[in-house]
Length: 278
Image (tube, rainbow, N blue to C red; front, side, top):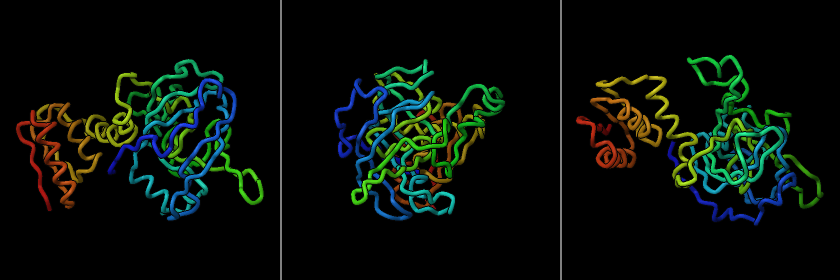
């Protein structure tokens, strides 16, 4: 994944605020109308949240290779269009749906595609956090609550109201989105949102791979193949776990040079940080 944070400039706020509670919000979104077709800036209507859902004002979003795969419709099950892609973002809670108690309007949050209900067998297990209800599903295109969508687009010629489908529980290529409260992580309001958006996927995936999957221990030697955002996050996760040597490998000269810079600036505390360009 190569992640780049994009500020809500082209997607500038339409002035929605506290008076939007319980009301639909009209905003701009980058809509994918078909596999491989250019995204189109469209006006969409975002429905009020259902129970345990949260409308989110998206201030920054990032682009991930997973978005590209879904946009291309590489798997037939992914070809649910029109659709709003995007799953890495940071923003502010606009309002809260019925039953939401741990979030409030104005909270800074990072939306995540792997939410946790906190009550299923998997959430209660110490071995996994892959929730039965909110586990990542790249083929899912509707909300968990009722199987519907929260986005509507009005056909200019017929006036018909057509659903616009979701992506990875998030759909962040929009000024506003609606997510399950289980997919929203509250963060410190002092944290820079343009950087926090990368925590939605790339950074957490890489650090999690080092901590949870590989379970890197102090003194380990770690080899990383691929020095994109996830690979560099793996390196940081390995450093935090006390790895004594980290080896990075890539065939892309641009990623290789960025990886070398990253190692010099951020991971210089590791005695042996080696990079190989193939």
